[in-house]
Image (cartoon, rainbow, N blue to C red; front, side):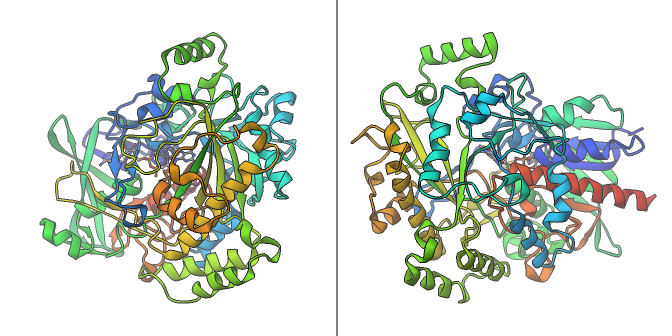
Length: 613
Ligand SMILES: Cc1cc2nc3c(=O)[nH]c(=O)nc-3n(C[C@H](O)[C@H](O)[C@H](O)COP(=O)(O)OP(=O)(O)OC[C@H]3O[C@@H](n4cnc5c(N)ncnc54)[C@H](O)[C@@H]3O)c2cc1C
């Protein structure tokens, strides 16, 4: 039985990855596990439970409310970065889209030198974290789910997923049919590691209760009464302490310092400390602990314990851009709800409470597509394509992982057999163009009903940094994504932004939109003009909320912070497990990879704990 001052394993951050680890590692009742989470357990809070309300959490006490520095290539705009500060982390505030990753994205980890990190080894874990409910026949037909396998029993995990979307809503059906009419049909089952074309995806929403299913409800609450699993909530970890004597692998991590109710406290770990504080806060905790670049740490008065200049670098995200199109009268969108219209919210709440129906049951984001650059398929625009391919053979960037990024993108643009961009539909307007986005997505909305067609760069070349701003554990880090700092990102992204206009004028999508209707910004009228698309890329560029990569899993000489077993280089008993370890941002939305990677990490740690007895 654990004491209050010492545990076998301490997990820093009870977020998406942290709670997977907490559950799996405490399955062995002889292992004592402590989770330290900065936020509260808000499991009953409707802003978390009700699927459509994910947006209402942003900027509240449940959000770290981070933001970038002014982004030079986005016209100096500041991009807001919500991050869950609550038990469940960002899985408690995300938009619930469950997008399976691409096999080749994962195989790229192994090519980089992470032995054993390929699709085959991760696949069992990708199937292990969720179960999937099949919708009724009429909904399945409406959503064009013929690709869904007859047997869903291979999905066997605690997160409950289902297909959102109502038969009455014309949008999700039109989405798939529009891509089909443009000769980009879905070519295979996305759950098998490849998705090209459009489909309506699943969401992490419990089909029966129509509530968010996330790491708290799925992994923590069902086992919260285990006597060997303890949770300290509303406690902010300030640093990891090391034993000054070097062991075989390096300094042994022995204790965690945290601040609770304004008091600095300490708890010891006998075997493992696992940092799962997310892509911004995990590198922050390493730096506060003296693990990082002396040029960053020393000016802040932090003694360098382990010199690794790559901590907090390699920051990636899927830069996105959306054009909002006014829809014809009578087509239901989420605009009124997003604007906070009282009558709409009351009607939606009434439908939700009475029989779990209506707009509160989904996030409004479930229609997706992946495409290679549409400009280049079938041999089109080969001169432009060759220019991009040639540029990708030249040395660009300064991070050791950059050369791998270029060769991967080169492969994708050469073969055109995988997506380089994600497209999705948001059933309301987007207001982020031309402004800082720290106020969230519901600020300054215009009257009318809209849909937003969105595209995001799947394999960005531009990478940024996140570093501490001071030695104060409560200070926000300095986040600089350096969006579009590699000019090739703009070349590809602008073409994809221009393709949104093709989608909007294709059948049957065009029939839903108001001819000559309003848009979200004067620069959003792009037509076929690539220069206008480039301009709008800067005006409207924003985050897809997929920050990752800042404690990359890679060989040390390739810019790695952790090895293939998640061990922080130069340490013993210290690992990082969360979105920060992804060396390359996968093309999929991140939660599926975070859950799967955490499940696999749990097995790796269990194995190591067994060997240590
Ligand atoms: C608004 C939003 C929408 C998104 N939508 C989707 C989507 O629809 N589909 C999808 O697949 N992905 C989505 N994502 C991405 C996905 O949810 C995240 O990438 C993923 O949840 C990150 O998991 P993580 O374990 O790395 O970090 P997190 O889940 O964020 O966990 C980190 C945890 O550590 C805690 N913590 C941090 N610092 C400290 C400290 N010093 N002391 C103690 N605790 C600390 C945090 O409070 C948090 O609970 C979205 C993300 C956001 C922010």
